[in-house]
Image (cartoon, rainbow, N blue to C red; front, side):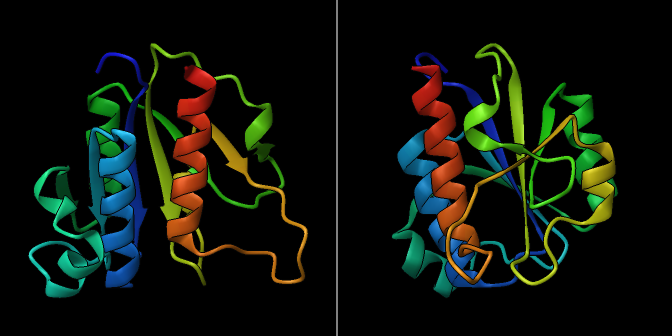
Length: 157
């Protein structure tokens, strides 16, 4: 992938088909290599995903794993650096990280209510967060995917 980082998006139990569709559309627009859909995450073919993605799921590679263990094994076998995106005590501000462009990055995003599963947090090479100013202490997960991938690509270029 010339001119951009090698990024995979991992959806940890993201059930909203509209969010999954939006993630596919963002992945296509920002040159994400693949989406790994895990557990209760919706996956194509699904009309609600297609409607929101505007058929981007046809252009972005994806795979489904029923368990986080299987997905993590796939990422480790393919030498991806696992970066969990979560408000956690050990998390670093997104703008303060310094990932090397040669790294293969797997960004893990969790469901809006439950967040990233403990397995991912325990096995992540790095955990990052986006500082917030409002009362709600959370963004929509599809919005977070857009912000994080865009920021990594911007810093790389």
